[in-house]
Amino acid sequence: MEIIRTSNYDAMSKQACDLIIETVQQLERPVLGLATGSTPEGLYQQLMERHENGDVSFKDVKTFNLDEYVGLASDDPNSYRYYMNNKLFHHIDLSDDQAFLPKGDVSDLEQECQDYEAMIRKAGQVDLQVLGLGLNGHIGFNEPGTSFDSRTHVVDLDESTRKANARFFESMDDVPKKAITMGIETIMESRKIVLLVSGEKKADAVRQLVNGEVTEEFPASVLQKHENVVLIADEGALSKL
Ligand SMILES: N[C@@H]1[C@@H](O)[C@H](O)[C@@H](COP(=O)(O)O)O[C@@H]1O
Image 1 (tube, rainbow, N blue to C red):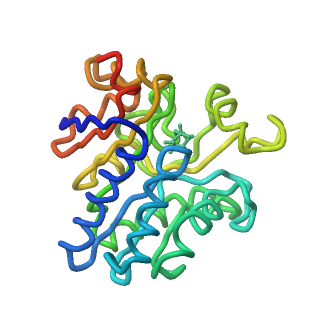
Image 2: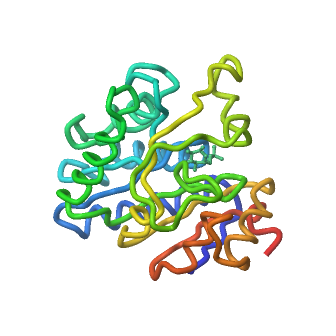
Image 3: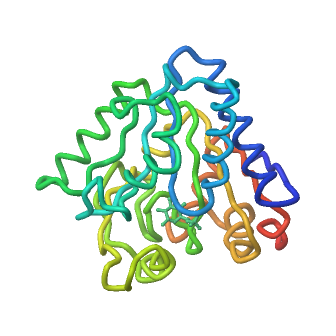
């Protein structure tokens, strides 16, 4: 695992932005895997700015997000579709039919999981996947105990994850209990993975990710087995290595 140490959050976001632009410019039909949460917000801001400056076009890009809450419609301000539209998609030259997220408000969730897998395959797999890191080691919404063989699936969210994400909702009761997420095996099929981590509160998780045992009890540890992972993290996140 390559580790890029940055002085702060903005520098982390800039490094990630440069990597994504490089990928988009190198490939004919780039497929990006994208993440939500607070961590990639700076990256999306930088991508928007670079697009505005004419440095990058997304016209041949396809994107697949990692996950979506079950039960939230795409126009719900807490859905990940809304987040992506608002923070990136609607500010760049990427139309809705180039940008995919699992749909959390369909009646047949199992079918949706299979369809999502099929769409990723049809697009030719993810070239570069952006990941954030949950405090408990989750990637996407793959909570501790998820099989490393998992494909896109419906998950019950950990109480700790619901609490960590409650800041975006009016009350804890409003935080969904389920989500659809790409599985660990799905994520591991990406050709390159860029993991972004910022802040001291993730330092223990980063230590476990880099130096700990590879175990399903800490999902992100599986990344030690991927041949092309770049961890871009700031001083705080790397403070316990
Ligand atoms: N499902 C998302 C993940 O994709 C994200 O990477 C993680 C960390 O979030 P944050 O970046 O806000 O710390 O938790 C969320 O629950």
